Image (tube, rainbow, N blue to C red; front, side):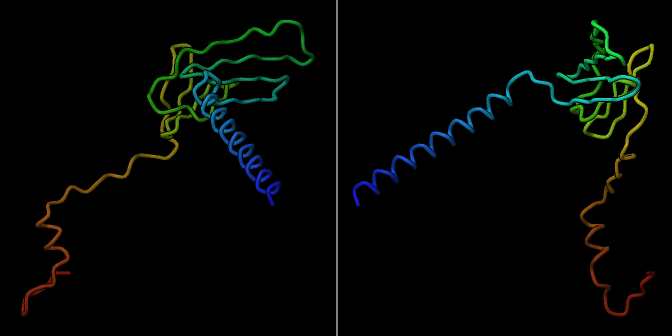
Length: 144
């Protein structure tokens, strides 16, 4: 009985230690400067790209590969929403809010929003809302 209790406590301790290490390692990675979005594009060779902050880094590997792989650094993508997808081959970026940016010779241009325009909110007074849902008075004419 005593050995079973010791085995249980040692196993529980190891489990807690492994769990603490796992949680600590995840939070340490989350705070590092690792790229948040990456892309590989196979188009007569390979184009690898990654995003760090608002900057896109890309490198092209020709087919057949040679010894030099110059890294292209794009200017920062405008906006404040996080970048969720990139296409370094066609110089495009998609933001979390749906904005699509394309980089041309003059810099980044907003091409539109993938999700369309925001839904307009109806501004209405409390009295109008109550009148809309209130039952009409007895004998009153309704226009609905």
